[in-house]
Amino acid sequence: MTRTCTGITRSGQKCPNTAIRGDFCFAHAPDLAAARKQGNRAGGHGKRTERRMLKRMPQDLQDTLSTLYRVLAAVECGEMEPARASAIAAVSRAIVGVYDAGLVESKLTELEAKIRERAA
Ligand SMILES: [Zn+2]
Image 1 (tube, rainbow, N blue to C red):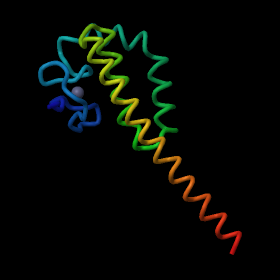
Image 2 (cartoon, rainbow, N blue to C red; image 1 turned 180 degrees about the vertical axis):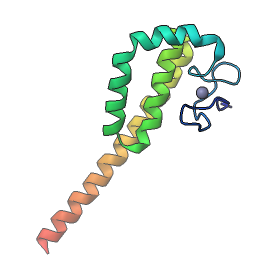
Image 3 (tube, rainbow, N blue to C red; image 1 turned 120 degrees about the vertical axis):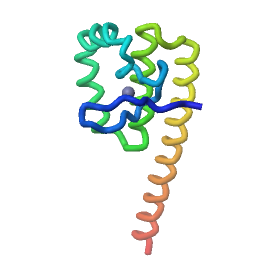
């Protein structure tokens, strides 16, 4: 069972992240402030890339991507076992696979409808 972080975001909302350290996520755990500072400096480029990608991504997959970035940060600073991260990555791939199948199915249905329209 996953727990949600009890931290408060910069915008004053309750943090939606999964708690990975006590009651806090990576971003809010008080004892990880030093690791975060180091990660933020190194990850400036990564954050911009993440924001750009999230904008282009369907809403359904944004949660999965956010989770993967959190997992990456947690593994990097030694807060998560690589084996657990691998399991999360595998489940994420499965989610993307199901999403892809759904996407192909709906495009196919769309195309079939167009073909029927033209034939009529
Ligand atoms: Zn948090």
